[in-house]
Length: 394
Ligand code: WQD
Image (cartoon, rainbow, N blue to C red; front, side, top):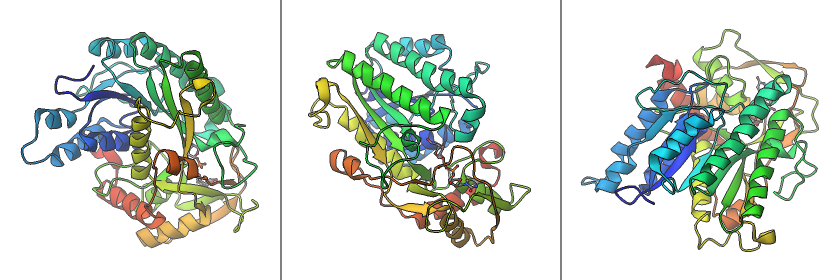
């Protein structure tokens, strides 16, 4: 069932987060979808979706149709996947079949006081490999149990299409680089295991009900950068754990200790520091649009799936690995900031190299990640300089 103007409703969990807001932006730019965002302010801000909707309105044609105008508005709710009643309320609002598909980018955080801010909902995943070792139950509750709960509600409301945000961490320490999707899944951290388990749950569901469910897991490598407008970007609360936002905070003066601690330079890599496959967050977002297209009945991506189960997983990466020191140099060029660093011990959960083999996504989804590291660093720095204190300034 479509919206009154014929749009397809797509529910995005984690819609106001860094990746979620860029996916919502990409969905709105197609003017084919009406976005319903479900999210919770653990590590994100309502302002991101307000700005995303503004970008959509600014991009409308001169005489927008009713559908165009509707596509530029976001139905956003603050709720928590660990409270199924809250999610059920959302699906009730649109009725059976009212939501065409779900893009499941985040899972619920610790229950949060239910407050509807500007009818914006926000929600953030636990996604720190190291932290998951310290609080595994929180990760399993929020990343696996919440996903199971969401799938059950989706099924009850005849919403049986899902694009699931998985991660390169499902590969653990991969036996081959670059990594193809056929690599065995062997996560080393509770965080990575939650992603493997969630993929397995979705895969089993597609096997159990092959005529109902269609699902694609997108194994994110390392998203970076920001929308070139500088209106939306990554704004972690507190000191960023991830390398690129941390370097941006250092360059803008948001962290006291401006010496980067490099977690080990004794890895079997060209300069001894870890290698990751960084892709522009907008290229990552475009991969979600392609995955949604692949859930259409006429799509051929599931043609050779075993047991006719319509489930597939794809790597989203550039296929180009960059080391920590190369990233530091790239951010030096983008910011002009003279980063100081010291080599310390390895970080628990880190693996030497996570570089994607993106061939399957390129071939079957038409995925491309053309934007360069230079553009990622430029867009990240543009976001940071335009928002020195992130969203919290509004
Ligand atoms: C990159 C490299 C660090 C900080 C990613 C996602 C995360 C999760 C797991 C998403 C690593 C090094 C970092 C610092 C450092 N999955 N580093 N000093 O670890 O690849 O995590 O995959 O679904 O969300 O970001 O990314 O940015 O944390 O680290 O030396 O202060 O930089 O060791 O090699 P990572 P990262």
